Image 1: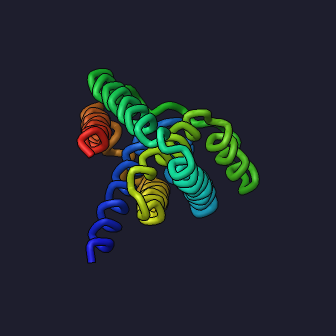
Image 2 (image 1 turned 180 degrees about the vertical axis):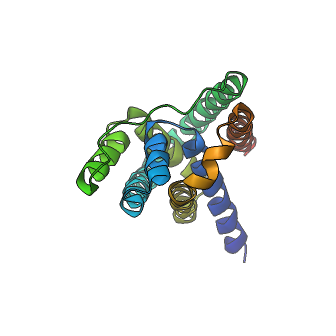
Image 3 (image 1 turned 90 degrees about the vertical axis):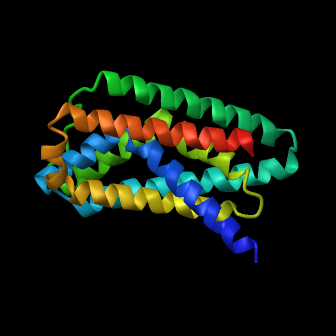
Length: 205
Protein backbone atom coordinates (compact mmCIF):
# COMPACT_ATOMS: atom_id res chain seq x y z
CA UNK A 1 0.00 0.00 0.00
CA UNK A 2 2.77 2.43 0.84
CA UNK A 3 4.42 1.95 -2.57
CA UNK A 4 1.72 3.97 -4.36
CA UNK A 5 2.14 7.18 -2.32
CA UNK A 6 5.91 6.66 -2.44
CA UNK A 7 5.79 6.45 -6.21
CA UNK A 8 3.58 9.56 -6.37
CA UNK A 9 6.04 11.46 -4.18
CA UNK A 10 8.97 10.39 -6.35
CA UNK A 11 7.13 11.29 -9.57
CA UNK A 12 6.06 14.67 -8.20
CA UNK A 13 9.60 15.48 -7.08
CA UNK A 14 10.98 14.36 -10.43
CA UNK A 15 8.45 16.55 -12.25
CA UNK A 16 9.19 19.60 -10.08
CA UNK A 17 12.95 19.24 -10.32
CA UNK A 18 12.90 18.50 -14.04
CA UNK A 19 10.65 21.50 -14.68
CA UNK A 20 12.75 23.78 -12.48
CA UNK A 21 15.96 22.83 -14.30
CA UNK A 22 14.61 23.55 -17.79
CA UNK A 23 12.63 26.68 -16.89
CA UNK A 24 15.69 28.91 -16.93
CA UNK A 25 15.80 30.44 -20.40
CA UNK A 26 18.94 29.38 -22.21
CA UNK A 27 20.01 28.94 -25.82
CA UNK A 28 17.94 25.77 -26.31
CA UNK A 29 14.75 27.22 -24.87
CA UNK A 30 15.28 30.50 -26.69
CA UNK A 31 15.50 28.58 -29.95
CA UNK A 32 12.29 26.66 -29.19
CA UNK A 33 10.56 29.94 -28.34
CA UNK A 34 11.86 31.52 -31.54
CA UNK A 35 10.57 28.61 -33.65
CA UNK A 36 7.23 28.81 -31.86
CA UNK A 37 6.91 32.52 -32.49
CA UNK A 38 7.68 31.97 -36.18
CA UNK A 39 5.56 28.77 -36.34
CA UNK A 40 8.37 26.92 -38.10
CA UNK A 41 8.78 23.14 -37.61
CA UNK A 42 7.47 23.41 -34.05
CA UNK A 43 6.57 19.73 -33.64
CA UNK A 44 9.96 18.50 -34.86
CA UNK A 45 11.81 20.95 -32.61
CA UNK A 46 9.88 20.21 -29.41
CA UNK A 47 10.05 16.45 -30.01
CA UNK A 48 13.81 16.65 -30.57
CA UNK A 49 14.28 18.51 -27.28
CA UNK A 50 11.91 16.32 -25.26
CA UNK A 51 13.19 12.98 -26.58
CA UNK A 52 16.82 14.09 -26.06
CA UNK A 53 15.97 14.99 -22.46
CA UNK A 54 14.23 11.64 -21.97
CA UNK A 55 17.35 9.77 -23.13
CA UNK A 56 19.61 11.81 -20.85
CA UNK A 57 17.27 11.45 -17.85
CA UNK A 58 16.97 7.68 -18.36
CA UNK A 59 20.75 7.43 -18.54
CA UNK A 60 21.16 9.35 -15.29
CA UNK A 61 18.46 7.49 -13.39
CA UNK A 62 19.58 4.03 -14.53
CA UNK A 63 23.28 4.70 -14.03
CA UNK A 64 23.06 6.29 -10.61
CA UNK A 65 20.53 3.75 -9.39
CA UNK A 66 22.98 0.95 -10.17
CA UNK A 67 25.99 2.81 -8.77
CA UNK A 68 24.15 3.68 -5.55
CA UNK A 69 23.54 -0.03 -4.97
CA UNK A 70 27.10 -1.13 -5.78
CA UNK A 71 28.88 1.77 -4.04
CA UNK A 72 27.13 2.52 -0.69
CA UNK A 73 29.11 5.67 0.10
CA UNK A 74 28.03 7.25 -3.20
CA UNK A 75 24.49 7.98 -1.97
CA UNK A 76 25.43 10.46 0.83
CA UNK A 77 28.07 12.07 -1.39
CA UNK A 78 25.51 12.59 -4.14
CA UNK A 79 22.93 13.82 -1.64
CA UNK A 80 25.19 16.58 -0.35
CA UNK A 81 26.60 17.31 -3.78
CA UNK A 82 23.16 17.53 -5.34
CA UNK A 83 21.87 19.74 -2.52
CA UNK A 84 24.88 22.07 -2.87
CA UNK A 85 24.29 22.38 -6.58
CA UNK A 86 20.59 23.13 -6.03
CA UNK A 87 21.41 25.82 -3.47
CA UNK A 88 23.85 27.50 -5.87
CA UNK A 89 21.45 27.12 -8.80
CA UNK A 90 18.66 28.67 -6.76
CA UNK A 91 20.91 31.54 -5.64
CA UNK A 92 21.83 32.29 -9.24
CA UNK A 93 18.13 32.37 -10.13
CA UNK A 94 17.42 34.83 -7.32
CA UNK A 95 20.33 36.96 -8.50
CA UNK A 96 19.00 36.88 -12.06
CA UNK A 97 15.64 38.11 -10.72
CA UNK A 98 17.41 41.28 -9.59
CA UNK A 99 18.89 41.81 -13.05
CA UNK A 100 16.34 40.51 -15.59
CA UNK A 101 17.48 40.70 -19.17
CA UNK A 102 15.85 40.40 -22.53
CA UNK A 103 15.51 37.05 -24.20
CA UNK A 104 18.87 36.06 -25.66
CA UNK A 105 19.02 35.59 -29.39
CA UNK A 106 18.90 31.97 -30.41
CA UNK A 107 21.13 30.47 -33.05
CA UNK A 108 20.25 30.89 -36.69
CA UNK A 109 19.69 28.00 -39.05
CA UNK A 110 16.06 27.12 -38.33
CA UNK A 111 14.66 28.03 -41.75
CA UNK A 112 14.46 24.43 -43.05
CA UNK A 113 13.32 21.32 -41.19
CA UNK A 114 16.82 19.85 -41.36
CA UNK A 115 18.37 23.09 -40.17
CA UNK A 116 15.91 23.40 -37.30
CA UNK A 117 16.51 19.84 -36.06
CA UNK A 118 20.30 20.05 -36.40
CA UNK A 119 20.39 23.38 -34.58
CA UNK A 120 18.21 21.97 -31.82
CA UNK A 121 20.42 18.88 -31.48
CA UNK A 122 23.53 21.04 -31.29
CA UNK A 123 22.04 23.33 -28.64
CA UNK A 124 21.02 20.26 -26.61
CA UNK A 125 23.92 17.80 -26.90
CA UNK A 126 26.79 20.28 -27.15
CA UNK A 127 25.74 22.10 -23.98
CA UNK A 128 27.84 20.78 -21.04
CA UNK A 129 25.23 22.00 -18.53
CA UNK A 130 22.65 19.58 -19.89
CA UNK A 131 24.77 16.66 -18.69
CA UNK A 132 25.18 18.18 -15.24
CA UNK A 133 21.45 18.89 -14.95
CA UNK A 134 19.87 15.78 -16.43
CA UNK A 135 22.44 13.03 -16.00
CA UNK A 136 24.35 13.99 -12.85
CA UNK A 137 21.84 16.00 -10.82
CA UNK A 138 18.63 14.14 -11.69
CA UNK A 139 20.50 10.84 -11.49
CA UNK A 140 21.87 11.60 -8.05
CA UNK A 141 18.51 12.77 -6.70
CA UNK A 142 16.77 9.68 -8.11
CA UNK A 143 19.14 7.52 -6.05
CA UNK A 144 17.39 8.83 -2.91
CA UNK A 145 14.17 7.07 -3.96
CA UNK A 146 14.93 3.39 -3.41
CA UNK A 147 12.76 1.32 -5.72
CA UNK A 148 11.04 4.41 -7.14
CA UNK A 149 13.66 5.57 -9.62
CA UNK A 150 11.36 4.77 -12.54
CA UNK A 151 8.61 6.96 -11.09
CA UNK A 152 11.07 9.78 -10.43
CA UNK A 153 12.48 9.56 -13.95
CA UNK A 154 8.97 9.38 -15.42
CA UNK A 155 8.05 12.58 -13.60
CA UNK A 156 11.14 14.36 -14.94
CA UNK A 157 10.50 13.14 -18.51
CA UNK A 158 6.86 14.25 -18.27
CA UNK A 159 8.01 17.71 -17.16
CA UNK A 160 10.29 17.93 -20.18
CA UNK A 161 7.51 17.05 -22.64
CA UNK A 162 5.02 19.39 -20.94
CA UNK A 163 7.49 22.27 -20.91
CA UNK A 164 8.75 22.02 -24.48
CA UNK A 165 5.30 21.52 -26.00
CA UNK A 166 3.92 24.40 -23.94
CA UNK A 167 6.84 26.63 -24.90
CA UNK A 168 6.73 25.77 -28.60
CA UNK A 169 2.99 25.96 -29.11
CA UNK A 170 2.29 28.64 -26.53
CA UNK A 171 5.05 30.96 -27.71
CA UNK A 172 2.71 33.49 -29.30
CA UNK A 173 0.80 33.75 -26.05
CA UNK A 174 4.00 34.12 -23.99
CA UNK A 175 5.69 36.75 -26.15
CA UNK A 176 3.65 39.75 -24.87
CA UNK A 177 4.08 38.56 -21.28
CA UNK A 178 7.86 38.25 -21.43
CA UNK A 179 8.18 41.64 -23.07
CA UNK A 180 7.88 42.95 -19.50
CA UNK A 181 10.87 42.65 -17.14
CA UNK A 182 8.60 41.75 -14.19
CA UNK A 183 7.65 38.47 -15.89
CA UNK A 184 11.33 37.45 -15.94
CA UNK A 185 11.66 38.35 -12.26
CA UNK A 186 8.71 36.13 -11.35
CA UNK A 187 10.09 33.27 -13.46
CA UNK A 188 13.56 33.46 -11.88
CA UNK A 189 12.18 33.70 -8.34
CA UNK A 190 9.96 30.67 -9.01
CA UNK A 191 12.94 28.64 -10.23
CA UNK A 192 14.94 29.66 -7.15
CA UNK A 193 12.16 28.63 -4.78
CA UNK A 194 11.81 25.20 -6.45
CA UNK A 195 15.56 24.59 -6.31
CA UNK A 196 15.90 25.53 -2.63
CA UNK A 197 12.79 23.59 -1.61
CA UNK A 198 14.12 20.38 -3.20
CA UNK A 199 17.57 20.97 -1.68
CA UNK A 200 15.96 21.20 1.75
CA UNK A 201 13.99 18.01 1.08
CA UNK A 202 17.22 16.20 0.18
CA UNK A 203 19.08 17.33 3.29
CA UNK A 204 16.18 16.67 5.65
CA UNK A 205 15.65 13.18 4.25
